[in-house]
Image 1 (cartoon, rainbow, N blue to C red):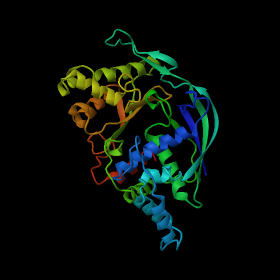
Image 2: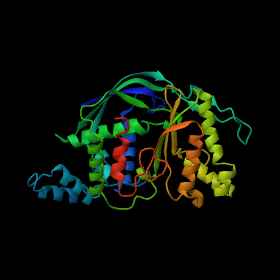
Image 3: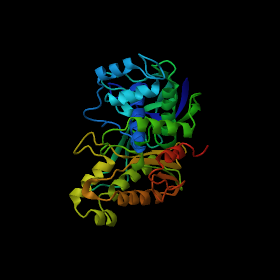
Image 4: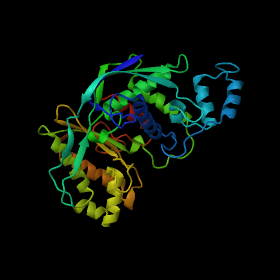
Length: 375
C-alpha cells in the first residue's frame, strides 16, 4: 500500500536544524491533518482548534463503552463505526480520532522512502528581490532555501488490522492536496507541488472519498469551530500567464498583492483607516513584525513550465476591520485575473466558480467536484 510522488517543486519539511536535509514524515503528517481539519469543518463537522488546548480522551468512559461492545463486533469490542461514535462521546473530534490526541494514538503509521536531492523552486534561488521599492525605500526580498526534489514513496500502515478506510482516507487527502494546493511548509513561496509517479492502489474515487469525509464529519459533530480553516471559505485558482515568468516576476506579484491591501482606491474605500488596513494585510498575507507566527493565508506556486501560476487560500468571515469577505475576495480575484487567463477558479457558493456555483447543502458535491476535474 504505497504511493510514489514526483516532487515537481521542492518539498520543504525542515528538521531540528531548520534545514531540509531530508524529508520529515512529521511535516507531511502535519499537512495532512491541517487539510483534513479544513475538510471536516467544510462538511459541517467539528475539529478542535489547531492551537491551544486540543482534545483529550476520557479513557475511563471510552474503556467502559468498549467493554460493552456493539451489535456488530460483540461484547468487549467495537466495529470501526461504533468506535468513532464512542470516541466522539469520550471527547475526541473527528480530526483527533484519525491523527491522535492525548491518550489516543494516530490510527496509521506513515513510512517515508525517498530518492531526493537538493533543489530550488522555479520561483527563485536563494534571495530574490522585487523590482518595486516599498514605502521605506528598499526592495522587498524573499528567501528561497533549498528543499528536496525527486521521488518520494509514502506507505500508509493502519494500526488497526484491516482498517482500509483509514488507508483510503490518507491517500484521498494526498490526492486532494495534489490537485488543489501543495504539501509541506513554505507553500506561499512555491514549494510542495507534486504529481503521482505511481498512483496508490487504495486511492478512493472522488465520490467515495467525499462520502467518507462527510460521514466522519457527521459522526464527530459537536462544539463550535470558531475562526479556523474551512473548505467553504477557501479558493483554488490557476492562471495561464502570457509569458514565461522569471523569479523576479513572482516576487513582484507578491509585493503588488501586498501593496493592493496597503494603498489604492479599492482598499481605501473598503477601509479608510490605515491601521485597520495594516491589520487586515498582516492577517491575510502574513507578517513577522507583530507576530512571527502569522503566516500568509494566501499561497501561490509557479509550475515548472513558468507559464502557470497556482494560487489558493483561506479568507474567513469576520475579517479585521469588519470588512466584508466578498469585498476581499473580489479584490483577490481581480488581482489574479490581471495576470492572464484564469483557467480555474474554485470557490464554494461563488459566481466565479468555473465548474458550478455550489450552494449551502451541497458541500459534499463540492468536495467531490474538486477531485473530479480532469478525470
